[in-house]
Length: 197
Image (cartoon, rainbow, N blue to C red; front, side, top):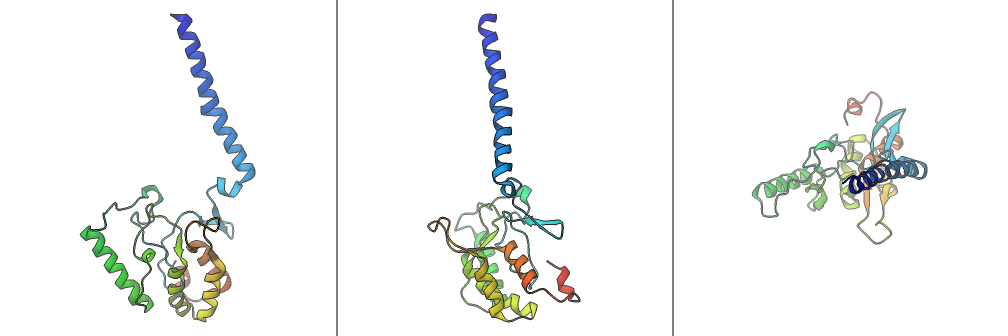
């Protein structure tokens, strides 16, 4: 019996060491060497402190910031996910209708982009469509007391094209856009809104 058991145990130990230790350590080391920012969650730092990740949406609600997509997880990365409501679900229809009415009222528009009223599958999508960002620009410009064209220029400069030029639509990373907004068009230091993201 030991003649069969010993080789099996040796092979098990070898595979655990190889696939459970050596391979993950090697991949982690390679990732840290080649793509250090991505391997460390694409964290964004300002003034020596972490303000977020380029990969995870944050709940910006102040008028002087661009707002992300709605989140079924309430922007909680530990609870990410969708509502899983079907398109005919009464609760989903009511939520989308209420969000559309709120968007129209806040931005004075009749057309509402779908990503302004529906949550993504993860609830943490860091991007909004270019159309959504452009429609929010008027509210942001008014709240900051700046010209609309200055805000639109930042939106256009922050736009990301389709992946490989083929997949997806033009989009804007909300955190990166809001950070560039604070850099280029800062709120006056005495503005009480400045502390409310």
